[in-house]
Length: 137
Length: 137
Length: 137
Length: 137
Image (cartoon, rainbow over all chains, first blue to last red):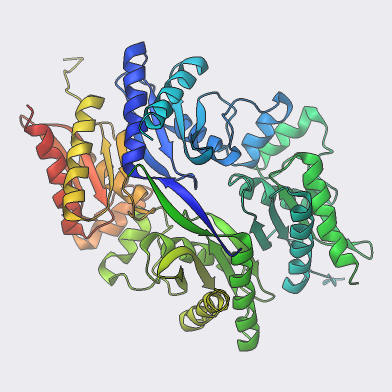
């Protein structure tokens, strides 16, 4: 009861997610910023694709941090509290779509955040990254 | 008239509030971030329970700081000014529910902020923490 | 190879370390700020004892973060790089004594940082906190 | 004369540097944080290997930014100005070893920063990353 077992992505695992997400974004023709974080919200892997918005570097990372903190995909917070939550977390909690927890055997092992496309495109790329890892497990 | 007497929570007092709040959160099965601040808004005691959102570390503390600053429970600011107040205080004033002043004999001696549950759950845990201290006075 | 098993302190475990450190500091008559972080450097538990320096809140936490990042007690970095490392990590890496990794069965599960006394006193309190947990395992 | 041609790493180019650096670090058995930036100092690619110091995430990136800014490997600034330069750039200019410009046909197209090992190990991994790209040109 003083310690608990957890599982974390290795950097190899994070690179699989990153490569899977890059491949999807290239296929869609939509350059993206893609961030992978561990369960503590620390950056594990990142890429900014040619043509992706430079400011999406920040939002992609915050989407990943938000997803791993709240344990659900980003974008589902009620409108009347989303700005309050962003302000109360020094801008770190974002309700933009594109952050998704990475789940292996029903356990969250990290999260991916994608930004520079539309919210729908960002989610699609995030899911492709996760699927690339799940296919290997 | 040049000095005034105040009463402040000791760290033992803060730990009683913290333990009371943890016990309630465990009973409810809702992991929480719990922050206790003194009347100066400085952190006295803190815990992040297993499974609580990591970003709630920041918002729980801001709830406590807001409650001790405004001297009333958080969440009662009018909607048309809540964002303006947050921005004008560098994000520190939050109108999220879950911050409650700690009152002993009608005197505010600090505040507790709770975050990671619903607003209602956060308030319930905060009140249980305060009640644990009041029961000993 | 895509995932790795780790162990983390629970909040119960963190509270044992905190209480053990408080007991030692009270016995020594030296009020302290005491921070416990997990392996990701996120705050798990904190106390500021009566009379402890308010600015030590920040340094105690950074000592814990530094210890869990570098995986050794703080204070051992060579003098010719200590300031450079602090500046290159936005002030987060500190070479002040008082941060110690929490090791259970030769595995690091978090860290404790103590500040407000002398370096030697801070280390003594940190070790007492860790010993309190190890005695229960 | 109003516009000039530049050459920049693509994200594919950055991933080649990243993979080359990871391979070297794995061969050496030294986990590293590795950051690749473009000529504007914006992050292109990043990885934090298992066991690398979490705070090296920040310093590795600053090493890359410093290298691309000054156009020479980091670590060569005179001791009497290194801290002044760090402070005058909000901590961004670092004189720690491990940042190296990425040069293709005598033109700087970005930089790599590596941190978590000794200065010498960091440089070795940085050079291996650059060599992996140069071998393909």
